[in-house]
Length: 117
Image 1 (cartoon, rainbow, N blue to C red):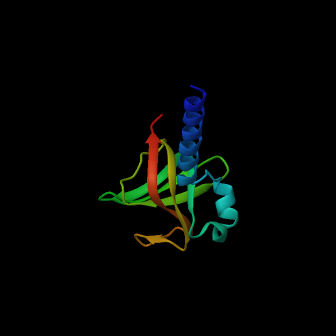
Image 2: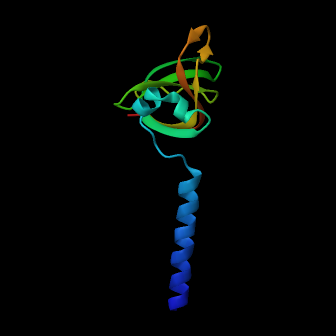
């Protein structure tokens, strides 16, 4: 009985460790904007409210404000509506252009979760 409990605890710890290592940790937008080169090539997670969005045919960009700053997120998965609370993960790039607009530091989205207010 004791061995079964130890095995269950060990499996739970291993499973939790695998889940945590598979997800990027949430980063503040202020940290990304202060040193975008530090995050280049690494997957980061951010969360905030959508303040602006532009797009067509399921592609475009939306701006997230997390209270520390704002960043544009490029997507190919459709645009969330303004006011939506969004958690996104992706890769940071500098000098991104879309539809003739330059967005400076941008995160290229790889996944997103959202909910409307």
